[in-house]
Image (tube, rainbow over all chains, first blue to last red):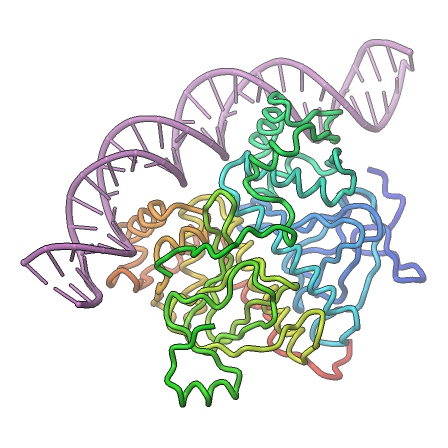
Length: 220
Length: 220
DNA sequence: CGTCTCCTTGAAAGCGTTCAATTACAGTGG
DNA sequence: CCACTGTAATTGAACGCTTTCAAGGAGACG
């Protein structure tokens, strides 16, 4: 992991507020003052939080166009480069100088947080991994293929599972013919319908919400 | 929405954009157009999402001062009154008429979403229930006592557990002397330190990312 | 006093974790 | 180009926790 760019704490700033980081480097750390927020220009970033018991919780993966680091005065999570990345740095949206883009950044941040909650809501390991694969495929753009540049441990900490369970589940999917593994980090989706069935949801948010006049939870 | 208030009150409250709902009633349903967002004046509201497999996911509890319903064009979750509630209704923050309070509402929504993610991140049932009790105690205001107006099923769906496991865990805590149960819905915390230890985090670190004070003209 | 709903508790089964070992892969140097 | 080496991923087996199935109890309300 040769650092051809800036070091962790001395982020190099180019003319346009662009920041380049090598794979594995930290954008900022949990507890740092939240002076800026970031937009991903290229590459992938993960945000994570280190709990008192030592285990790591991954709160999101951020792709090109995504925004992260929108928080109060102090970053409650760390942000790290999953791949080599280029970011655009913007002044903090909150508290001080309100930028025009700030509300949009907040919306995107909220959307991302909701996506995480949605993933967690799935009950079983198969549910979560399937939902994760579908969601990742959607965001990667390529329809039938999913790139997984993050490690199994990253996925595990994102889904609140162990890397063993993630690995097992992915292998199971391959065994059942739902997906095909082209190397470790590339997944071809063979049976999207089956995957969706396992995930237990429709996958797309706005288009089909089958809420007729179904009275949920009668005692409400 | 359905109003259970007397006529004269209704008129008075409508002028202020206030809405009153009885326990169990829905504020809006999943899939409804998101024309407004809401601030809790009194009482407690839950937001929930119904998954395709039939199970319910509770994405948050909202207390006085909290804001919910800040979303895109369509509500991706339902909102329901856990107790009798009074709400203030505001015009939708997103897309159309930008209100001055909109960014603040977004910030609060984001804070709430992060809180949920934080809860989910805990590994075991004991972890999650302990974290939930501490968080709820903090928000309820009363230090050593926690009111739990929501059902065990609500808590379970919030923590992604079954109501059985929630019940068992709470009973265990009581058996170990960490808490005392005064009826089903009131919990006295006897050993906050022990509870924190089980929760596996400090609990207070997160409560400070709140966005309370928006500073005007402050320098970076 | 009965009924209803919600909560608690028990026992067994299922699933994910843990511990432990093996295998695939990328980077390096011969 | 191929062997070597360290890291990441896969797989196996036993354990433990949560769920599931099933039953019993506690309040609330008429």
